[in-house]
Length: 500
Image 1 (tube, rainbow, N blue to C red):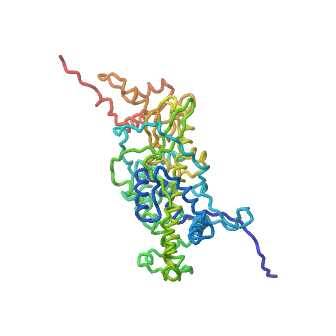
Image 2: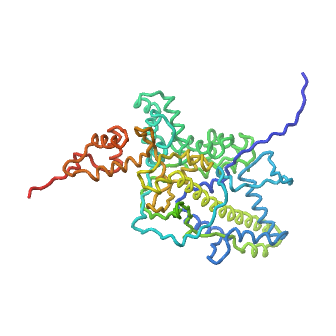
Image 3: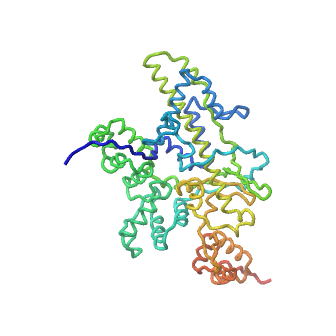
């Protein structure tokens, strides 16, 4: 049997989640107020990051000024930083750009499941801000956030039952507080079925939710960051003790990788959240600042990004002065490296914010397209809509749509709404048409609002009235929706008329 060596060329494409890309995803899920705070903090920490004044050029134009100094040392530093940004987040093995030079360009319009075309800056001076009396909101609880995702998932009735039990048994940090055997006994189902549903819940946002221990929580996040990174998962599975003791040399020796690679993997693990549910544990009230405005123009609706109060960033010229004062030598090289890192960080933040805004705009446009009848005719015409439909429309992942829809608000001609408000499960009418559960709730609210106070309608009476409108639902569903609306049962709604 003869042995021979062959050389094969294989093209593969792989998305690598670097710390910078993780930062971009975190920016995406921040509320507007949290985004402003994050930008302010970055400006304090990065001396090369400045806020534009209204009469200055845009940040992209400011970045373009560096191109004028071609061949200079400071231009080389910036170009090197941008090339490093382009190469690190998306590693493409064996892929060329097709331009003949073999250089790889990082596609900013693709790094979060394809953000699409560059957005347009609109003039929104004709739009009035809402009254502060109408823009206060409570941050949703972890239970609310997960239940919302559960309702919009394509699960069977039994899977939903299990999912509700799992979500209801999470502790404040987001960990499962009961065993699968206990859930199986309560529900009368096989442990294997319970575990299969648990795996689906663990794909929900926030990453790492519904884990049974710290190791599983970190593994869930590691698989979301980079499913093919075996070294990262091996450290979490087998070397948490070494990680705790900072015994990186031992990890390097056992995994047969360099110490530098170990440090990079440790950095990724350090960026993970060991308590994914804790962000929802503190209830607080905060003002709503709309991320987008929906403006009606003729028969069409236009999506306008709200840029008010959002700092417009640019890279200042301080780095030129710093580079001019550096001479040759070890200290000078350290200074140059610092400049590279800071300019690179500033450049990345600017582009990440731009992409966040474009993504919010793109998702809002998709929602307006799906819910056109709501904007034209009101809440009774709100259509059933799930995350998958918008995800397919804008070519993103469902988890990305979930992040975009949470804590983002749009001001519309019909009021101010969170983006997730427009996602709703469906109820089928007798005509075979689907109607959004939110519309059914509103009908129940209206029916009760118009009832005779001395003879309040029972839940069964409401079932009959809804059936007359072509909506067939069970009495227990009416009771459930009534409770969600905060409406008392008929026995407690009856008004007592005092004798005159």
